[in-house]
Image (cartoon, rainbow, N blue to C red; front, side, top):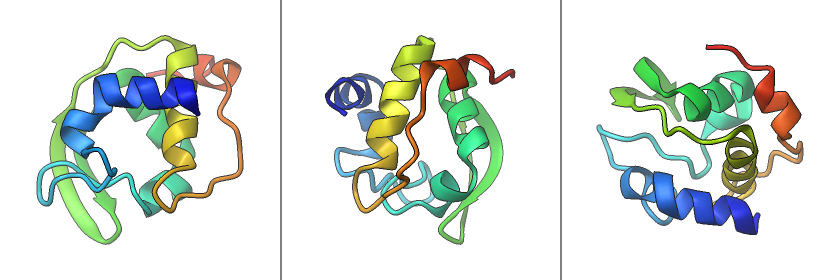
Length: 105
């Protein structure tokens, strides 16, 4: 969690905000986000490779671009574990670097 918090502060916080609530109509929330809970593979893939196109989070459609951040598989796992267990999210399943390494673009 501590390593993930550092990655979040360095790479994610500017868009998704310190509290994970995102920016309405621009950047989706990570706090209490159904997308994260229901689309694990897609969420990890977005952090690893970036994301563009339309997604729906908590019933709201977002259509912006998230650039690939250039994170290592370990950093992706750390930040995913931080996000999946913060701000009302309670995934309970640890993301590992081995899991991240198997995800293809």
